[in-house]
Amino acid sequence: MKAPYLQVTFRRGHPVAAYYYLPRQGNPKSVRARRVEPGLVVDFTAEGQPIGIEITAPAKVSLVTLNALLRELGQAPASEADFAPMLAA
Image (cartoon, rainbow, N blue to C red; front, top):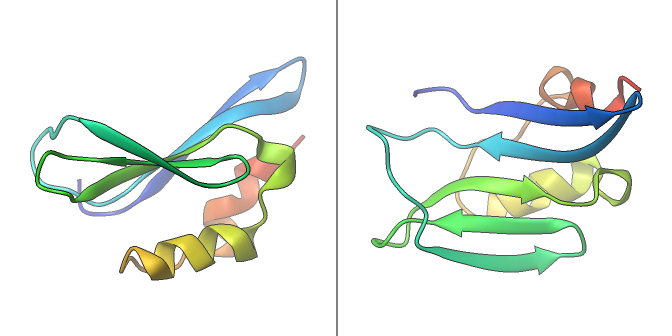
């Protein structure tokens, strides 16, 4: 997968969780997770590469917060269009 994407789970029209998939080669497995902000957990491979960000509290996470974390991880920022599904409900 070359481009990141956001997958959102809704219940009764409201986002309850989401996962931001980061670009990666193959099908790496998560072996370690690190909580970084209220509502954000980063998944890492055995080699320490970030592979995705769990958004466990969508109401508490903004695009600014997500992009600050992406910057820290050395990833490209998410656009407003990338983040739009979180605001859809």
